[in-house]
Length: 173
Image 1 (cartoon, helix red, strand yellow):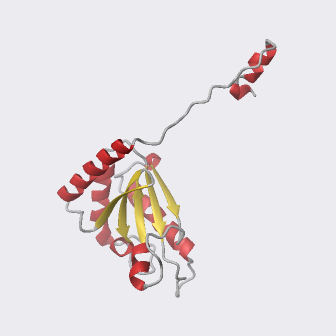
Image 2 (cartoon, helix red, strand yellow):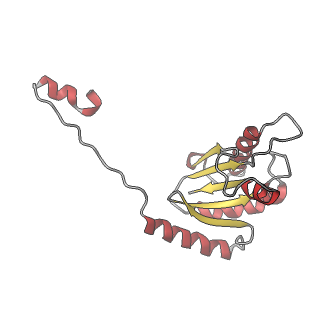
Image 3 (cartoon, one colour):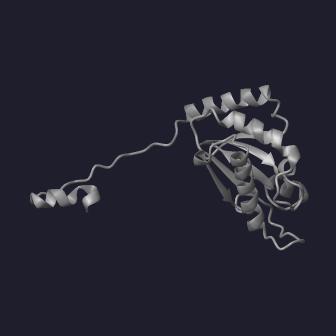
């Protein structure tokens, strides 16, 4: 009751009506401007062939196929992916947003090792986050890591091509 100011009003025998503040989602026009800015920078950095840029859930999202960042079944970031991740940080760092790194898998359980798809999706997103922190190229306080397993497919998992598209890391701004 104290958080809503009811206790102070109760002392005066009055009933206080709490003020409710409404928050609106990010303006679509603003998201469109950020999208265009990132798209231009991607072309300048020559990333447009490796990374898909989309507007999704009121955010700007960079989609990276898992094969660019990881070897098959591995959770360690490939050394060949380091330049791509550095370029992604160049895109995101000047923007006034946090960065959510999302790991996604297909719906086929791994056949080797003792890792589940849940482990793989989470460990991949965390390892990308760790790369940014260890290389001191993006501040930890602006990042989070999430593993979604196969819960958010972009296409059906009914063939190998679809499953390959669903195995990805997304950078959500």
